[in-house]
Image (cartoon, rainbow, N blue to C red):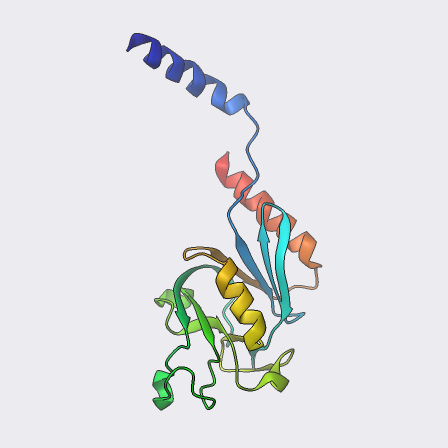
Length: 172
């Protein structure tokens, strides 16, 4: 038992000398300026697609959030439209995140029954994607994954590096 404690003590003393490791957690980066959604994991792009965002700058919140709800064929409460109905504006998938103190049921990345809206600023605040794109993202992203929404003229790889550096700084 003493050997174990000695080992742990030595390891804790060496920890500040060890380099921080790159976050392997997935992150969805949404850039409102370019209407892009990209999923990174361990520095690799796993997914990239165009999206629609809020009609005004304030409608789609900016910041760091986490995925809280994932739903297939989501029910549209506002107009009482069941999932799978062609009139349902949420499309085939819902990836809800906790923006502005919500529980993942108000703000989300979702499909759409209006594919011509993709690439435009037209939504009430959510991030719309083509159904086939959001289905792929849905299958790749786990609950609690980070969602980082920005409005930037930087290229997506530069945004990812900035996100990664912030995560590394938090480890120090």
